[in-house]
Amino acid sequence: MKFYSRIPYFIYLLLVLAGCTTGKNALQKGNYEAAVSKAVDRLKSSPRNNEASGVLSKAYDLSLKNSLRIIDEAKMSTNVLRWETIMEQYGKINRMADEINGCPSCLEVVPAPQKFVREYEDARLRSAEVRYALGQNLLSENTRESAKRALQNFEMVKQWVPGYKDINNKIEDAYWASVLKVVLRPVIVNSNYYKLSSDYFQQQIENYTANYRNNKYVAFYTEKEANAKRLVPDQVINLRFDDFIVGQTYVKEKVEKLKKDSVEIGRTRDNKPVYGTVTAELSVFEKSISSSGLLGVAITDWQTNKVVTQKKLPGTFVWTDSWANYKGDERALDRNQLALTKRRETVPPPPLTLFVEFTKPIYSQFVDYLNSYYSRF
Image (cartoon, rainbow, N blue to C red; front, side):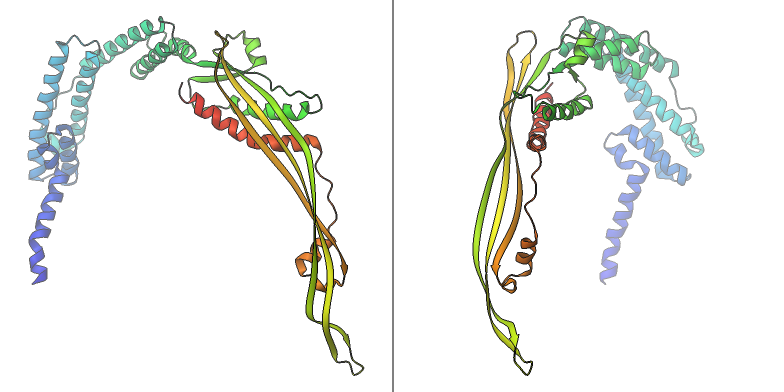
C-alpha cells in the first residue's frame, strides 16, 4: 500500500523534471531565451519531443518579439548608451539563431531563424564610438577618479573592437593618469653601526612594493627610481626607527634541592643491592637577550607636504638560552635535568642579527598597514 501511495508523487516529480528539461518552466516565468536553450538541448537528445517543440516555437517567437521591441524603443531613446542595449538584443537574437541552426529537429519547428549580423556589428561599432568619446572627455578632466572611469570606458571599447583607433595608447594614458604614484624613501636609523641591518629591512620592503598587486591603481617607486623617471609623486612614505634597544641581557639562576628515594647505593657482601636516598643541588641558568624597536611610518601628500596618515609599529625579539650544573649525586636528577647539565652557555647572535630579528614583526605589520590604507584608492 505504501508503494502505491507514492506513485502519484513520483509521476508529479517526473512531470516537473520534464518541464525543467524542455524549458517549460523558464517559458512560464518569462525567461524566453533560457526556454529556447533548454528546448534546443532537449530536442537534440530527443528530436520527437512534442513538449520541447511546443516550447521552442512559442519561446522563440516571444523572445524575438521582445528583443525587437526593446531595440525599437532604444533607437527612439536619447540615452547616450542606447547602442549597447541594441547590441545586446541583437546578440541575443543571433545566439538563438545559432543554437537552432545547430539542431536539425529544431529547424523543423523554426525553419528560418532570423539573424541580424550587420545590425549587430553596426551597434557594436557605434557602442565603441560612444565609449571612446566618453573616455576622451573624462580623461581631459585631469583627475584620478575621472581617469579611472575613462579607463573603464576604453577597456570596453577594446573588448568590443580590439583595433579601434589608438585604443591601446588611450588605455595606457588613462591607466597612468588614474594610478596613485607613491615614493618609498630610505629608512632612517640614527646609527651607522646598524645601517647594514636597516638596509636589509629596507630591501624587504622594496621587494614587497615592487611586487604589489593588491590594487592596480597604486604604484610604488623607490626614491632612486622616481628620480630616474623624473616622477612627480602623489604621496611619499617616510620611515624612521624612532627608538630601538639591542641586546638587553637578563640572567636568572634557579637553585633546586633534589632528592630521590629507593636508589641503589651499594651492595652487600653477598652481592645484594642496598637502597637509600640520594641528593643533589641543581642550579639552572636562564639567559635572555631582548631587542626591540619602534618604526615610525608617515605618509605625506606631495603637493601639500601634509601627513595624511601615520602610525608607530613596534617589534620585539627575545633570544633565550639555558644550561645547568649540579653538586651531589647525579642520580637525583631526572633525564631532562641531566641533559641540561651537559649543555654549556651558547654564544648569542651578534647585534646586527638581533636588529634584523626584531624588524621581522615590524615588517609584517607594515605590510598589513600598507594593504589596508591603499585598498581605498
